[in-house]
Image (cartoon, rainbow, N blue to C red; front, side, top):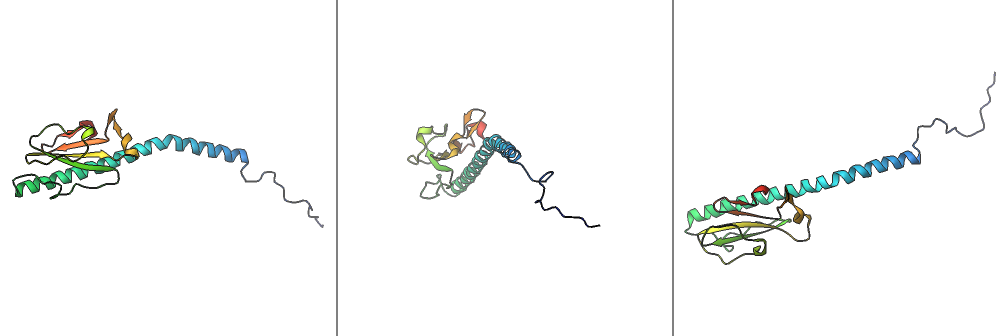
Length: 156
């Protein structure tokens, strides 16, 4: 018994491939998941950068205390350079009296005196770190004093 082979090409009926509509549905679902996840991811990155800034400020405060234990004053920028980072500018203020950390407008070094200091981290302009918020409070500028006062407190 001779079976004749079909001269027709392969049948696509019941094939295991994807149709264009199925592919478009998958792309739509992936795009939706990315759109939902991206804001959370950005907030996670901002919070991580904030944690790095806090660590650098605490390390700098420790260095200031070590300097003060060996000298009669806190260190100036010439004695002890502020930390550096890609996301924040770090400034410190050495003031005659302790007090609240400087305002946003004062995000620059001030004339040093000897009795108190404040380390300030200001988010650099042009990056997403300026949008860092915790419970509606901006964390783009954080401060730490020699008395371990941290502002804004909710950001720590």
